[in-house]
Amino acid sequence: MKLQILLILLVTCGSVPLGIEIDAASPDQWSRFRGKDGTGRRTGEILPPSWTTQDWTWQTTLPGIGHSSPIVWDGKIYLTSADEENKVRQLFCHILHTGELAWSHESPGPIERHHKQNSSASSSVTADFRGIYWLWGTSQNVRLEAMTHDGELRWSTDLGSYSGPHGFGGSPVVWEDTVIIPLEQDTEGSIVGIDANTGKERWRLTRDGAEKAAYSTPLVLTQTGSDAQIICTSKAHGIYAINPQTGTVLWENKCFPLRTVASPICAGDLLIGTCGSGGGGSNLLVALKPPTTKNDTGEIIYEVSRSTAPYVPTPLFSHGRLYLWGDKGVVTCLHAASGEIIWKERVGGNFSSSPILIGDKILNISSDGEMVTLADDEKFEILGRRDVDEECRATPAVAEGYLLVRTRSSLFALNLSTP
Image 1 (cartoon, helix red, strand yellow):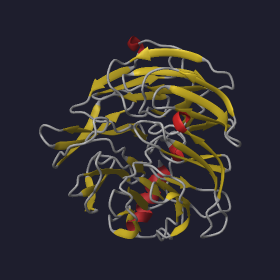
Image 2 (cartoon, rainbow, N blue to C red):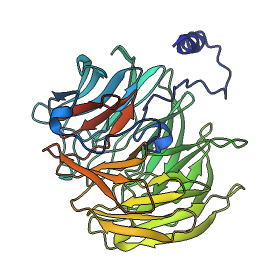
Image 3 (cartoon, rainbow, N blue to C red):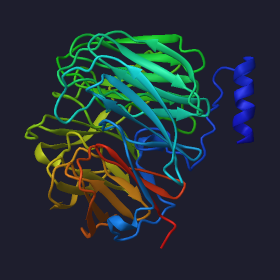
């Protein structure tokens, strides 16, 4: 906390040198969609093999509806919802240990038609020591708002119009003091870098339209001895890397024939990205060895096609294994380095949520609200099932010893340290 206060003072006084990493996120933060680096992993926690709905530490009702995933920063939970009847979107801050509402912020705006599996509050917020960054959009306007952790509006900026048949759903990420906004659309789109301190636009990378808007959340790739890269995926440009300081393309591999929804992840030395469609018959996963020189395309090590590759759920990497949780309830475990299948089994249900790893267990939640727990192992094993009895399309979060599950209109918390 002392370091965060010092960094805030440095930013306020304009004394932070360019290029210095100032995001003092502790390991306990879950600051973006699927936590640190989008990995979806918390190895220091222990998920009980089974529990009942009576075991929840607390639960609270959320006004409106939403599919955004919760994030956690310093004992506070942030997530969004939308009252579509009254045409207002809301950002909520709850106290992690009690569920108490600390504050809320409203942004009125038009509610437009969207896909039945989307909502007007599907974009997950992201946070750093400065505060929270909240993104929402309509066909007329995409808006980014920055809030303090105490609920005060710091700045807001309009990023232009949006074109996509399923409605808006992009989520931002933060690299150092730049907020990265993915806006790849059916028509010409962009990736935008915004100054996290002022809200001013630093750079804008124009992206081709491919009549398939992208919904994937960028990956901030930082490796020892290498400059940071922002990894994005889309039908128009495949898997590609951006320089986060300038917004220039470092390399790209145009490997996708369809829309991207699942987010790219790093699996050892490989980048994993997927594309697909609602039908699932043409889904494609690409395992790419990224290039080491600018303007190269990298090497595709293997591909996984058809129903094995997920469309919406983001893959999970653990202990050299890659878990592909299919939209229609088929889970595949394979060797991440080679693509060789270890096992492939059906767990049932339909899934929009992405799997996360808690200790040695994998958890995901079906669209109907059934939580399924699997062993992180080369042997397929279902460890437990339990219901939350409501539609769920948000990915769970784990931070500071709590599991958080967000359904269509409720938020649940389980204290993992309680037997």
